[in-house]
Length: 530
Image (cartoon, rainbow, N blue to C red; front, top):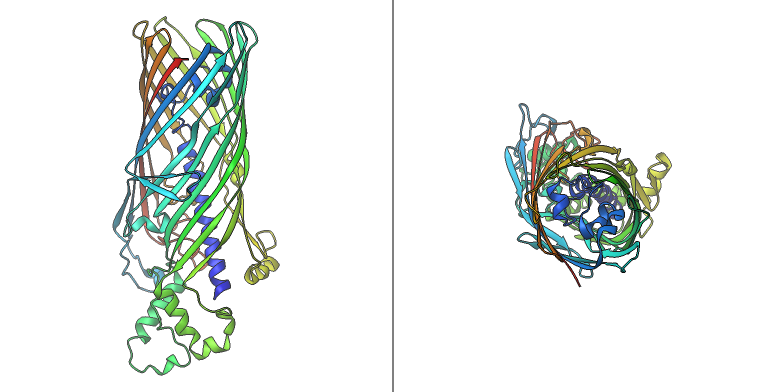
């Protein structure tokens, strides 16, 4: 039993972790940096100046920070994640007629924000996301060099669902977070027209997941029907030969709860950019943000339901269980825990953009971007002990398994996108801004799910900048992101396939699923000299 549970657990862990990583990385990209100007301009700022946040967007623009300056940032936000699970005509046919699914024709909503606290571990629930951040820069008088560092969050996404929410089978709690806590940066002004810059980011990467698990499919449907026929009979003579009445195990039975906590405290990246401004009305910029190859380490705990334990205990007590004693060679456990590690790549990103001023008061920014999500073609989970079942699997599929690891194919896609922003200079102090950024999903439709409920998205931004005095600037930015996706029954084997080999992991087998995501993010920065 122990080895069989382990294989099931690890397959589920792999599937849910990697589905979460891809879509939430695309959702989080540049959404939680905390730069009001970038937010307001739809992140079309590669050829523009974003204050201390140029460390991320284009470190070459740091040359515009003169003297000694410090920036304090406040970012807050909330997400509204919803899903609908509709039973199409004929629902239940693949479960041998069983239709008592409490999830069918129900809806899910995740509204609470979650954060990962470095040094503490685990997901912490908050009424809404709130993070104070800061940075500083130094440009010695008369020098062409500018030194800077910034604290920001390239990823900061998390949500929680209620204990009885139908979406809990693909994320009761989820946090995917990357915090850059130190980013030494250097920018050099080559001449009046050209600047170059580089930054190195030292980051903490974390991933935490808690979710319930069920396995609707043909096999569990067969067991459920057999239990309905046999387990209501008193003194059933078949129980001596085959006892399947120790606990319920149908297609809609809760099997386990899975809790995962993984992190890497030091994950370095580097950003390299240039900014060319040949005149007052035109600028061209580009930035390359490197990938980060990480090895997340942590623990997992699996808490098995009484029904799951009872089913196997009853089976083991019968003749079949005695003959096939390897079903539970090490005994039955109500919980299983261990150490797990994951090799994961934070994808590389490239952006190029222009800044154009057709009028003294008007400015238009346009960016084109690329993110290398194709680096997530497959992932490997490694465990702290050898598993017999994986040793056997490696004989039949050496490409996907060894005795201590399992490889899961993902097939995600690199994506190109664009963004546009407009700024209007009301007077010498006040600037008004607006922007738009369509975001194509990195996940193909046949791999969509509810854990990472993001299809193609649209991001809208508004904000303003105010020159408080000659040394102080206040920026305010607001983002609204919306995404919807439709996953017809049996169209994605990450959520609703129902073939005999798709029990891991399709918790909404044969259901039509629709999701929507709305994110609201507000940021404020206060920059002054010191």
